[in-house]
Image (cartoon, rainbow, N blue to C red):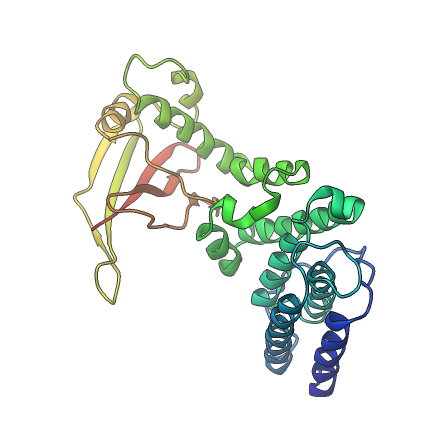
Length: 311
């Protein structure tokens, strides 16, 4: 996108946000998240145009009433126009992840009006919102670092905002909780369910040994590597704790019951050829989280890596 085009987009954005009726919502899906930008200049211009549009929206919403329907000269109208213009920027530069996030946030805000204010319009916005989130989820499963980081650093309540109870978002919530498809991910989910049950004690009802019969061999040696995350300085660091080796389900059960509840598995799971991983999030002191579960060629668990936040 040339400089003249970027300036034109911003100029059109000023006019659109100020007075014109809402443009129609785009009906075609956004392009997939690209690994590389069209060009360095295109990426820079896209981000600059998105920032300028956001500044103009702040001015517009200061002038108009909050929470209005999609009609001329309302904050609701300005938000929907912002959706249209950010959508155009993302289509021009699919690698511009920050602008894609601005679009997701604009869709969320525009779709958060009361249903009786925007009816089908808001439902369409929520569907667009969910589709954009699904692309970020799929990008995370495919190894997009920015996608993983964004999902890991935000709770579902933060991601979904005012539409978290809308029926349109339920499939996305369920899919993110389930994690990626594949045999390795299935083995990981079986281990997680078994560990959660074992950490409640030997007599806890629920998942039995049959669930773990595949991924946790009765005599397979499993290495457990604890890590300590320290954020108390200007340079957070990870140090290794004392590791241990356990054998089979009995050894793992002894380790699990020694914990103060099951370790969390993080907000988003991604898998490669041998391991499933969860980016570490540090919400509170002494928070224990699984960060890696690794398996051998036969899909038997061989490594558990945990990380605990310090003070």
